[in-house]
Length: 284
Ligand code: ADP
Image 1 (cartoon, helix red, strand yellow):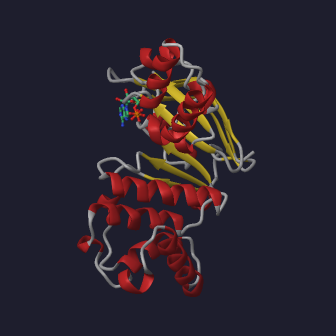
Image 2: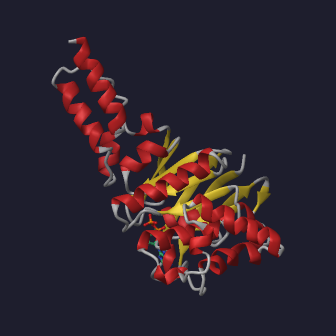
Image 3: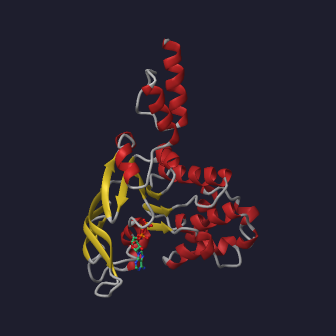
């Protein structure tokens, strides 16, 4: 069990007039190799939650256990947590700062105290995963790149630390469709080929439907739904009541079912819908 969150409560600015309970007694377990999507309206507590998993925030109460280590305990070093849990913030490209792409990606692994040879290997591997050719890009400035490429450099910097768990906060925000597909493809590869546990914060139900093995839905600091996409996307009313929805194609399938089409209600991606509709047409 790599991650166990027990009764986690977080109150910002406690004891002031601005006190805000951002997380309210949240308990979640995440297994090795899962692909978790964390969804919820703005302000529901997603960012606060993920920052606890890599030790950036301390709980007001509750425990976070990563690989049998209670990371909320005194004396736990942040660097030890970061080796296991990597966090890619929203718009991470704003944090690029080195003069070359190679140096920027090497920054994290160097800080882990690895030797030059190991750092070099990791930089090459990470660039390869995010689809940036090492020889072409290593000496370029990150600031010469397009938005999508910059974001991939920033992700490579976290990937090069080779964490077991990779958390990404809205990694496709603000990118064009090609940039989005590239990044989602990279994340899928990290999950499938490198067996990384992924926690993806996303607003896109389409992306979530394609990728996640489990969905956690946050609302007002609580985790209100937790289950496989097939289970969560049946909760249309609950999702809509907290300002979310289901994939567009699921609404379409629902309409077709209402009109008497014999299609499964477990359709969440366009690909599945195509197959189901063709199957239903053949039967008639
Ligand atoms: P999300 O990531 O789902 O948008 P957040 O975790 O950022 O949600 O925020 C949860 C709640 O905590 C919101 O009401 C937000 O205004 C509040 N909040 C977040 N960060 C701070 C902070 N640094 N100080 C005070 N309140 C905060």
